[in-house]
Length: 387
Image (tube, rainbow, N blue to C red; front, side, top):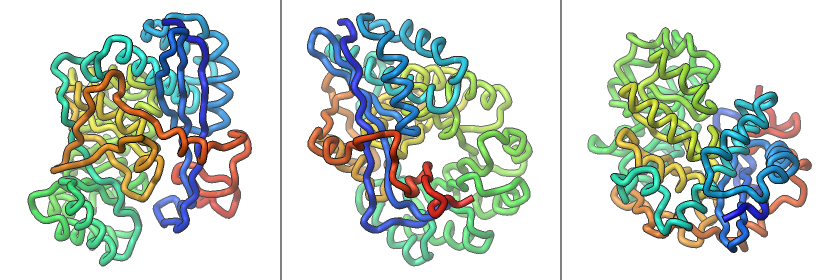
């Protein structure tokens, strides 16, 4: 099973009704798909959440020529080769994420060749069900938050995640309103989207305890590990972070420092299934839990779910509920959440089929020419940048 070609598809979707969040007004979404084709006719799929042009440069201009003809089953060897090739300009950011897209596609191929789902390749004890939570509840009026939160529960979720970071008054009112809307038996995660300082986080700690937050996510910038450490001992809610971290070398620092309780690697950012699995094993040894971040596309969501299902310390997977078609319509059979869980397919590999009609509809002709807009984590053009 030799690698014959690697194909990329960079997708862009524009919202008819943009929404407000901590980074401004989100006008659209971006994601990059990676297809690895082999000489025996198989295709594996992965995804990348990074600047599309940078992904194109790394995958097509450097890695593909060196990967063609190599054994697709040698996942570990190929990962090390790709990491070594990009080390001088990589290790974090776009290069690591691009490696992850290829790596995930290789895992999909390995599963298809073995006739097993990826989670069973990772662990014979992997579960078929993966807990999932509704991720949304952005900056809205309190009444709108209540309505949305209740809707997530009615749709089959048993956990929801909301965002704070406007003001102490708004944040406290919003947390109490969401807790009331979802009832006492469901879980509520709170994401501060890097908008707190240590003093604010300590002030809000009693409210987080009052609403029984399941976890408190990313209160500080991802480079500011000292603030995470300063929060320890002043909050009795579990703290999580990791959506903006890359690779074992990044997560090792958080784990060794005992700065968080839950790590959140994302296969489409941190280096693929291989690296997310290694992070998960490291967390397991340290007595920490794993709850991957997902905000880009359904390929990533399912790949993250396979990792969670295979890890004994895996908690849950994130489901974007902002009306993102890259989550809701990218797969021929979109995942369904019932009673708080996703039933993963027993089909080989990731067990998914991408809707190529939607891919062609959303495919950008030039990943180096991105229309001005705010794409949640990406902003292009001064009018769409919120500093």
